[in-house]
Every structure is written in C-alpha cells, then in structure tokens.
Image (cartoon, rainbow, N blue to C red; front, side, top):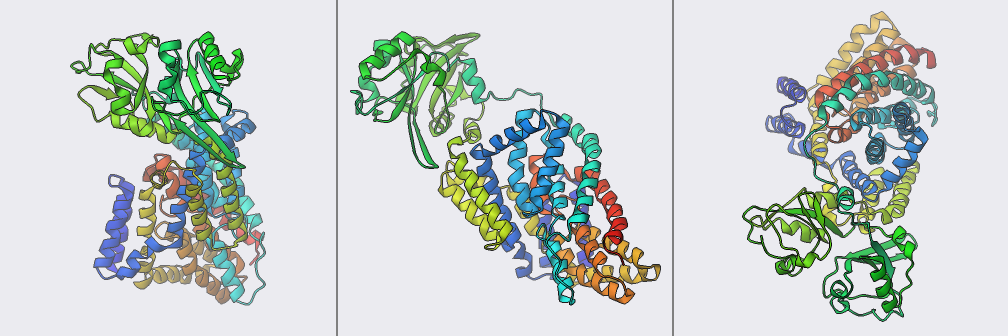
Length: 610
C-alpha cells in the first residue's frame, strides 16, 4: 500500500511540474508498480490492449483523414459562416455542437471528430485554438451527461440500478441534469477560457520567420499569371507524344508545369499528377497546365486540335497533391555559381524543374534555361514531393528553404472529401446504434480511410497518431488495479461514506460526489464509476433513501473531471494540439470542476428526491 501511495504522489507531482513528458512519467510509474510486485506484468500491460486505447488510435487516424481531405475545413467554413465571424458566437457554437454530438457518440469519438474541424475553423477565422480546444474537450464530457449512451459511467450506474431490481433507466433520464450541466458549464467556461487560455495563446505566438506557405510562393512568383489549362481529347494529334517531342519551350516559349489525370467513378475520384519530364507521355483525358503568353498558348492549342478560349485562364489552378514547389538558395561557394540553369541538369539528376529565379527583389521567369546563376540566387523548383525532399542531400550547393515534406503533409486531398464524409457518417451511425462494438466501428473506419486513399500513404496515417497521448492513457489505466488490490480505493470510499452517514443524505451525497471526483483525477472515470456505484447504492439502502441521486452523483463526479489532462481521454486528446501543460488544466479545469460539483450536488436531490 505504501509503495502505491508514494508512486501515486510522485506521479502527480511530476505531472504538475511538467518538466518531464507525461507519457514518460506514466511509464516510470507503471514500471515501479510492476517491479515492486503491486501489479502483475499482465495487469501492467493491460492498458495497451484496452479497447479505449485502441479506439483512440483509430480515432486519431479518422480525425487525420477528416483533416487531410479538407472535410474539416469545409465543415469549419460552414460553421464560421453560421457564427458570423463573431468570436463569442464561434465559441458558443463549438460548445453547443460538441455537447449535442457528445450526447450520442462517446466523448473520445466526439473530440476526435471535432478536433480537426475546430482547428480548421480557428485557422480560417484567425481565432485561438488554445481557447477553443480545452472547452471542446470539456463540452464533450458535459454533453455525455445528456443521454444514457453518452459516456460509460452512465451505463455503469444504469446497470447497478437495474441489478437492484428497479425499472431500467430510459434513454433521456439523464437529460435534465445534463442540460443543467451544459448550461452552467458554458457560462463558466466563457470567463475562464478568456482569462487563462487567451493569455496563453498570446504568449505562445511565435514572432520568428516562418517558412513560406505554398499559397505564398504561388502568389510571390506569380505562377497563376499566364497559366492555362488545356484538356487533351482522344482525337488530338499530340496523344502518345512525349513532352520532349513537342519542344514547347524552344518553339513557343511555353513551360509545361503539370500533366494531370482526373478520373472518377462516383465518389471514388482519382487524381494523378505528374511533374513533366522529357519522357512524359501525353494521354487522352489528361489536362496540361501551361505557362506562357496567351497568343503562344493559342497557337499550340490550334496545333494540338484543342479547344481554347481567352478566359480559360480563369479556370486554371495549381494543386499540390503529388507534385510540389520549394525554394532553394545557393551557397556563397556553391560549385554551380556562374553556370546556367540548362547546365545544371536538375531534371536528370534530381527530377525537378526550375520555374523561376529570385535575385534580390527581381523575379526572372523568362528564358530560364539561359539564366546564369549568381551567389545568393533563390531558385523556385517543381517536382514530386519525394524529389524535392531529396534536394536537401546536396548541402554544398544549396539549402532548401522551409520543410517541403511538412508542406506536402498540409496539402489537402480535397477530391477525397466526399469519401471521408461517408466513412465518418457511417462510423457515427454505428457508434450511435451500436451495431458492432465501438472499437471495431472505429477501427473499420480508420482502415477504410487508408484503403480509399484519404492519406498519401500508410506512413502518413501513422504520423497522425499522437503516441504520447496513447501511451499516457495506456500506462495510467493499470493504476486502478494497484489502488483496488491494495485496498486504497475501498478504504477511502467506505471511510468517507461511513464518516458522513450521521450528517444526513445530503452530506453522504456530497461525500460520494467528492470521492468520485478526486479518484477520477488518478484513474479512469469508468473504473471509478465501477468502484463507487455499488458503494453509493449500499449507502442509500443503509440510509433508507432513494439510491438514484447517489448513483447520479457517481456518474456526474466521474464524468465532470477537468483538472487533469489524463483523467479522461478527451482531456488528453486536446493537450498536444492546444499546446497545453498540466497547469493549464488546473487554472481552467479545477474551478470548473469545483463549481459544477457544487451545482450538481445541490440540484440532484431536486431532480431525484431522496
């Protein structure tokens, strides 16, 4: 017992201190309890096979796909339109929408679905993600109190109530208390988030030089000027020819920026981009993206038998699904100085094209091949994302500016948004109606997101998983075994309830709520509800009063736990995205948890009289 108490205390101290990563602290605590013989190796590792943890992994993938396909951005833009660009209305919309979804979907699933949407909303609206994400997590927990299926502790107390011989609780028995909780919680979060999280967002803003975005590069180098998109018909004489055989640059001064194949079967749309090289073959149905004077493009269109009108440039666009652009700056002693672009053979050696040269404040876009390079020149190159990433290997000649592969990860595969939307909707339906176990619903959705191409590759899907949060939750779950096996849980719970029995049912109700709320800081809310629900039922029977308010004190106390990032999965999910530390949860979550605790203790006897 002493080892367990000391480990629990030390773990809490290190979590609050925040100088060591929380997942490492949790793993050390796990090892201490296992090596000390408090829990068995099987119990120590049980968290890593827990269905909640596995579900979290799948939800990270699903959420990543929602973000990756631009679906989150589309939904976010729609919600922003509804908010009228009012920060307060946006805040209330996030809270209300999350609470409603949380009433029918697990709070973990709700946050995983809403997190990428809210991040996109914040980016579009220029709002602070720090102010929105923690309230998002809290709203999902409060929304879970609206229905029977909203959160596992609700199901736990419903089972205990029914096993005692009472009529089953209905789907909306929880609704009155849940509405009080959501309303009071929203009113409290408005000032708390403004006082603490807005200030945090301002402190966390970086003033350093940020790498240019793809949109900024396109605008700076004027890539959309004189850009035309020509569809290649099956009757065109250029079908089957290579880029080299067309000789467009020398004959007409036209650069081929991209050859794109667009194909679709219903929602299963497929887009394949090629960074054009000499051997690229033109096929029927391709779109050629050409940069040059309108008269020259018109001449080529006539040669190729392609319909072309002067306003075609209005439809031209550049996407970066498979190919990208980046800047490289020449080193002062670079061996390629005084060479021309044609001499470099970058297409042969690195599979990239040079689109423009920036020399101080001048941009060279015409007759690129004959341009002689000077020290300090910046080259705008185009190629596949893999090829651009490979450019960084030649550090003697140039330096690649920014992080091209990171930029590639930001490019949304928006043509896959309908597919991601259908998969997400199907997952929500399965979660609501419980056709199959929730963990299987989430895993099926995550696998479908990968198989249908909502990610560039499997590695991209794995990168969306926040392993720190996964390990943190998995390593903390076995703590409940230690507390139960050593008798700490039973001793604390029974002692508190017994000590307050003489003060009447209200005091016992408050004691049960307080005990549940404190225990949930250290072990999962589901485990806490399982431990305390039978004690609450027995206490009510001893006092000769209605057990229902006592059971509801357990589920509210277990679910409304906001003072710790690891007390509930939603709290942990938003921690990295919001760049929160443990102290942020104490500043915002602790006052909210205390205030809601007082409100619920006072209102539960009114909703369910003793």
